[in-house]
Image 1 (spheres, rainbow, N blue to C red):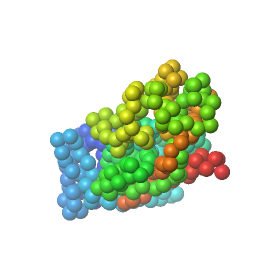
Image 2 (cartoon, rainbow, N blue to C red):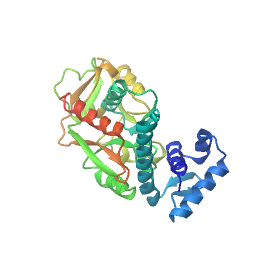
Image 3 (cartoon, rainbow, N blue to C red):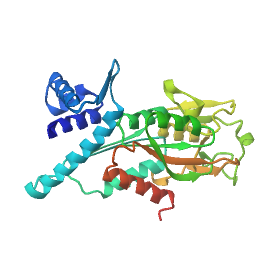
Image 4 (spheres, helix red, strand yellow):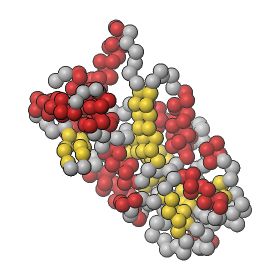
Length: 302
């Protein structure tokens, strides 16, 4: 086993494919594949599962990756200390449901960091894909919510994927509407009062399920429904069509402007928003900073 082989494994995981990793590493794909197979043979484990759709980490591979990252990090610290080597490029990726606080926390951390080089990824994506991204180490963290309706199904998927859920905060359901919406002056609204307005929901693609919906009350019959794929489109339709959506009630005027407001929904339910992660892989310092920053934002900046 060599340090170079460990770096190969890390790069393959970061890229999600041997083909892309070989290009980034400037070696041929057969040579990279051969090196990985030699390492697997030496360790007596299967690090990657090969399928017609590509590769994924095995259970042993997930644990091996955690050790590999620690070894490479410690090696780089030694090189920085004794050889004055420049720190390597910082890497981080997070997949999240469409939450403004997740974007704000990301922006705050990046703006404060002191690094010559970094490569970060922020994915606002579908619920099922968030779980898959973290399971396959495409993202280090995932942000999603649990409630009484979806918790059993989501936790089953997390357990199956060997992932854990870390609660960040619990929110009461709110609606997001435009500031000139007919309901904007109310202190709270009920579901009956929403019946005649278009309901905006984030589409979930081929893995569409009531349990994967980003919005609570996903099984409630509605007369008017519009599916969207991004937050900007949703907010434009909230304004242009007097539509509404359901979420945590947390808005950021710097990102969303003052045209969108949140109004409490009269409903005896709650949403627990949290991070999902692989417990076998030690979280990077940036991931821990990101979690702390979200906690600060969600607790009113305290």
